[in-house]
Image 1 (cartoon, rainbow, N blue to C red):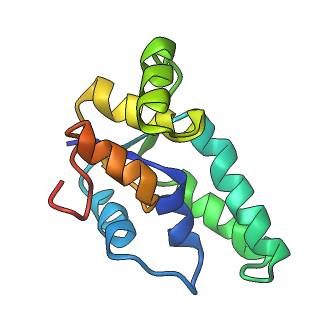
Image 2 (image 1 turned 90 degrees about the horizontal axis):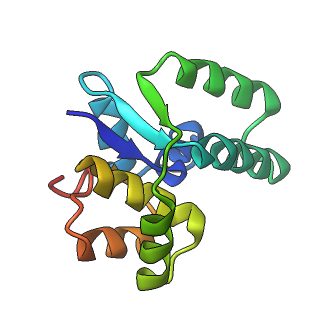
Length: 136
């Protein structure tokens, strides 16, 4: 069954000095299931890579190789968020609009969510959205 992936989980895949069981579970799950992401994911993930490059955690070449590998994975972009629901979730859980985009997508599609973001994970639990790597 498809699942929603946020940038924190996908960013972990690129950084050799980071490891998280939930991120690993999400990556392994892509062997059998499709991932779904909101449009903001594209920008957030690239920003994560740029910040990691500036901090010397990854090279530009490694970022490029990672993005190529990522393009080979079954990850689809959702371009149709429900704005009123996104804003409601952001307000209710004091999330950024960026984080609320992942939660809105997971709720709307009734899919589990892969995230390493603690506030987003709390909001997902409150909204009864299963978390990948946490029994979801």
